[in-house]
Length: 226
Image 1: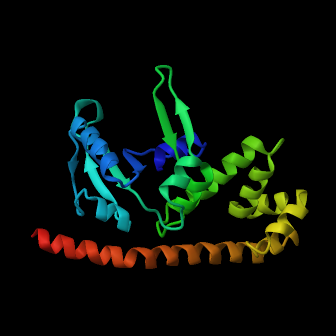
Image 2: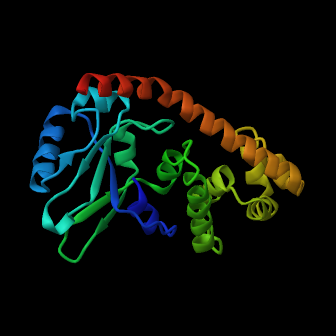
């Protein structure tokens, strides 16, 4: 659900971390603990690797010591703000396989974009690159689902205007859910840019509020560790 997924979807990002969304159930977490043991992974911050922390939305952080993955950090989460639960994410996942038959499961592109809507500065350019890459790869023969995805998530004013003009009926249909499409349809670049910024700021503030009680809990956990 992190940098490696971004690379696959065409928005390259160098990362020494592996970010994973997991099913927070006892049997599954036991299997995960066994895998972490094989990686000689040590927890590097609070909270502890416990089901209750994962279910509340905390991330649990590890660093691997095994030679083949020395220094790689593994960050685990089970709950993401603004994103559906694990069962739905799993149903919509993208699955890759290598020549040896190993499978790798990634968040769908739409879910990855939703997960990137955080208060971190670096995530918003990544969202733009993810959507642009999908548009460039599929614009000559898009599916209805891809068109709706672009109209919902595109953050590049010029491209959003071009898509809205090429497919005005779809843009008008989605305008209620994303009012700034009105500015794309009217080619009002200044208003569109302002609305895109306001949209981003609203998401960043929602993320800040979501993490506020979780950060407070982390601070209390850090105090009890000393």
